[in-house]
Image 1 (tube, rainbow, N blue to C red):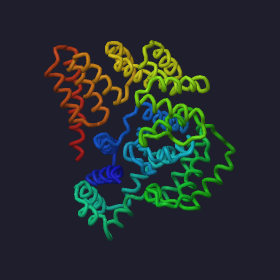
Image 2 (cartoon, rainbow, N blue to C red):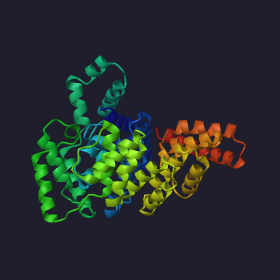
Image 3 (spheres, helix red, strand yellow):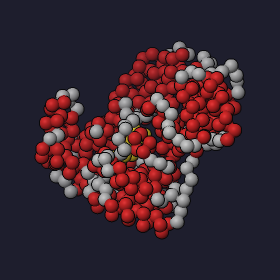
Image 4 (cartoon, rainbow, N blue to C red):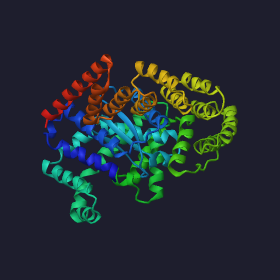
Length: 440
């Protein structure tokens, strides 16, 4: 429920402008606010492999559908509910519960395609056009009240007719859901994924019949399921799961449940065992499990886990595993864990070299900036550490906090070049915030 409060607040913020003239600046501000709130809440899963994996699926769908006229970004959210959302400025979130509920990569990709379609069809803007500012203010007031840590007050606010009003406001109309399904099917059909994914996912939801969150926020019917299956039969297309899906789903399951996922796949079992042993610092056992897996599944995620395990043993072989993952186009993940492994071995200069070179040519994930910050701390370079925290906060759209850290850099550094870069960052962010203030 907390996660969707962010969307309620986003809609509330948009009530301060005329919904019929919502422009890209308004939309970007609300999108930035949503991203900032997600990061601040701690609900974004801070795992570089999982986040990049989801972004790759999303970007692949956008490329397949030639959807380049809008901004999109994708986040894996720490939430057990089987749900997903699309917010302003193309901010799309997939719950960890949904990824674990999915049975194959096509189902996961189909839900991403469905949420992408809400954005590409301008459903949020069309929703606003049908609602008065009075209703939006009511919605915002309720959302703000939910923030109060008072159970009785929250229950009272969400009871009776107010709760009904809230539900009517936040649910997409059935018309929008049908349209998103149709657009998602076309998008999936143009990609490498199996178009049956949306139909099989929806069918499982209805078969479970347990009032899942997805059904409450995405009205679903037998007719929609039948329609999706009918479209699938016409396509005659199939798709086999990638190794990324099965291994990262197993990783996510263990992270959240601290036990191995139930799977008939020997590869998944070996990966899960190796990962469990690694996290519990039983490195010899982890090596035995990963060695078995390396013989039958030379996947980039297997190479990454092998590198992390071997790095904790008295050997230099670990570097080659990360190099193999890098060559299989998992560059940031490989560099991140290579640097992390060097750090765990106390080789901080080597760790810094890996990420410093990479970050100069690639805009890295905010999670990578935090690792860089930690490395600089261990090298006693506080200004550079502060700068990396500022960079991470900037990418998280937490602009005021970013300014604070860049100011700290300016006050502590003796490097003129770093001072000027931090000063430029502060100026750019303040200009952006000024633009945002003017539209209110």
